[in-house]
Amino acid sequence: MYQAIITETFRQLLQHQQGSLESHRAAGTVADPLLDLIQQGIVHLEPVFPGSTDAQLRRHYKVSLSHQLSPAEIEQVRSNPAFESFYEKPADELPM
Image 1 (cartoon, rainbow, N blue to C red):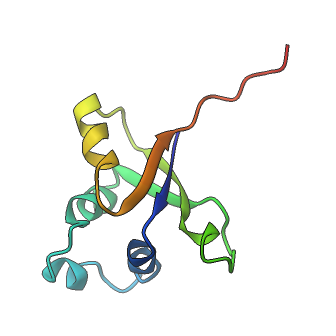
Image 2 (image 1 turned 90 degrees about the horizontal axis):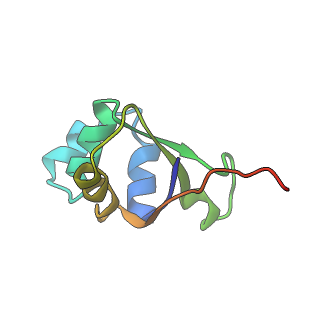
């Protein structure tokens, strides 16, 4: 599983996703490749702290992928300007 911190602008775009992302796409945003992956169902973003009113916590998201992406595709997602940080969360380990 991956986790990311997204920009406030992209968070607002996701929040208004119920409307239509096409109007934002018409403006030619830098997040267009990421929006394509979200609309195709390849990338799914889920808030880590749903319902939080803290501006910083609202930008933390779990990132799940519908299928295994190649390292080049992961790098393409990771390097999208909509992400301030993007990292792979290590698997939980049982205590010894």
